[in-house]
Image 1 (tube, protein in one colour):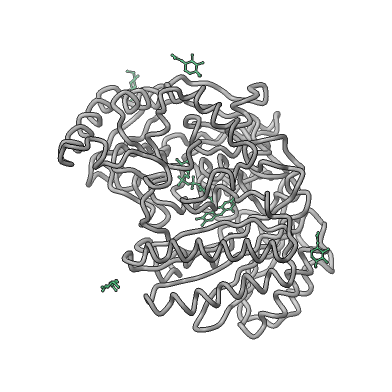
Image 2: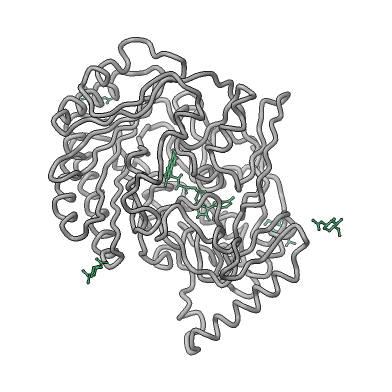
Length: 504
Ligand SMILES: Cc1cc2nc3c(=O)[nH]c(=O)nc-3n(C[C@H](O)[C@H](O)[C@H](O)COP(=O)(O)OP(=O)(O)OC[C@H]3O[C@@H](n4cnc5c(N)ncnc54)[C@H](O)[C@@H]3O)c2cc1C
Ligand SMILES: *[C@@H]1O[C@H](CO)[C@@H](O)[C@H](O)[C@H]1NC(C)=O
Ligand SMILES: *[C@@H]1O[C@H](CO)[C@@H](O)[C@H](O)[C@H]1NC(C)=O
Ligand SMILES: *[C@@H]1O[C@H](CO)[C@@H](O)[C@H](O)[C@H]1NC(C)=O
Ligand SMILES: *[C@@H]1O[C@H](CO)[C@@H](O)[C@H](O)[C@H]1NC(C)=O
């Protein structure tokens, strides 16, 4: 997703319980007042604390660890947990799952905390932060890297830079290894090497019953399920991923004036339909601003200079601001956002809503910009913190050809691109209105894609961009029955049903 989008985006307070079936606090002990539940959780927290080895630690409100364990990229994705725990070993994490499973205590599992739906990595029960699973091992001989889900992509690229290699992960520095990879993972280098899941060699997994296991391509079902299936099958504590040689790259952000909207749409459509060079990548966003639509792009080429012809159209258009140049891979990623430029910051609400696209035709780009203009005009008068944007991600037509069958995408024979809407606002009383608005806008764009002749009827929504109400079938298609059956087999006690997220 485009940086400019993220500097102005926040998340919403719509209840994760709706989406996930996590028992609501008031219904779990239906007749009891809420303080009984709080007392129960307190005793569960104490039980966890006494079961832990000295590698792990439990935190209560006001402790520093508690604050960081509950913190998300934006405030509206956070909840106030009864306590938080930072397991420091797989054994301790297994014990935690056994304790919360037995006591039926709601819990959250957080890696980088960048999800756009409340309750997906937050809880009012026991918050499990993966911060201490921070393995970082470069295994030069095997051309792999071992990564812990406590790490973020910006730090990983920085630490890999001296080795002259990189791995396939996020395009924004603070995003976590855990959520991005388990949902799929689009990178600047996905046209070359596929999704993040296509580059995993092994997962270390704590199963819902607390047993620690390693999942590789030999484990037919779990291997399939973990690649895109999110937090349904247990908690991943280490990933072994392929490394790729990495030299200097070329690219950066260009922000245009609204008067250049038509020219930029032409350049995007041209890039999307003509460019087949796998080293080239583009993100293109439309942002609402005072009755107009401002286009902005991130250009990326995986070499010190792009061949002529690929990005010339963008470079010819007069711009307001640009920072396109030759630089390190970590530099282009770290430059993708500066939270300090956010008008809403960590205090706001927001939502993302993904919608699949198979062709960024001029007609469809018109529809995207029109949605931004229409909803921006309608919603910005409600609250001064409102920001409305739509982002096109024109990957190559071979983006799904680098991997074997996986939970997501459900059909690798048909390409689709993970387009996304971002609505953010600062007054949480607008949460309901905004959630309905972004859903309506995404539905309009799906209709526009169908009208444009696009093959989107069966194209999957990218789970990591899914609004909380997205039906499983829209993301996982024909894979839903297999994933449901597998979850029943792997988690007969429904332990992972106590945490938030899309649930099979
Ligand atoms: C600023 C920004 C930039 C982004 N850029 C990209 C991008 O370039 N490419 C892309 O594909 N997506 C991108 N995304 C979307 C991103 O993939 C999702 O938001 C993803 O869920 C974030 O992962 P996380 O670990 O930070 O989130 P969290 O909120 O910590 O986790 C998300 C979900 O994954 C589960 N989870 C996390 N770790 C584990 C684990 N180890 N085991 C089991 N379950 C786990 C959590 O329980 C939760 O349900 C971006 C999002 C933002 C906000
Ligand atoms: C943790 O406990 C082990 C075994 O009892 C001990 O060897 C180790 O020094 C302890 N570590 C810390 C950090 O206290
Ligand atoms: C996308 O649409 C444009 C315009 O209709 C068309 O020229 C192009 O061939 C289409 N591309 C693909 C790959 O379908
Ligand atoms: C938020 O919106 C509500 C309802 O429209 C309004 O009453 C309240 O004053 C607003 N709060 C702020 C801080 O603007
Ligand atoms: C835990 O679950 C796994 C996978 O279903 C199973 O193989 C294992 O035997 C279970 N362990 C225990 C102790 O029940």
